[in-house]
Image 1 (cartoon, one colour):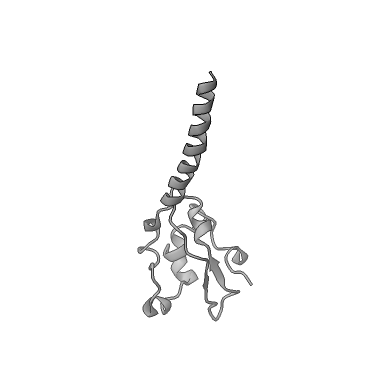
Image 2: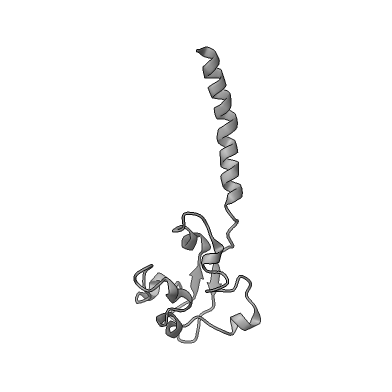
Length: 115
């Protein structure tokens, strides 16, 4: 009986940390928060959090949004193509999910615009 307890203890000490390492390796490192610039008629800048947006996924999958909804690397051309409410109302960019069904809509400015 004592031998089984020793073996179980050794397995727990070795296996549990190894499982944690595997989980950490499977999880991609998420980019830092992105502050989108304030447009002329905007109530404030929008801070986009990858952490918040991927928390609803069972496993982080960058291809849900990239490159279809947003480029992975911002270029000069993508910076000149701002996200607007007109585009969101057509189901583009943020409006793909933030339509009041899949995720909160954009009627409350303070949900996204901070500052």
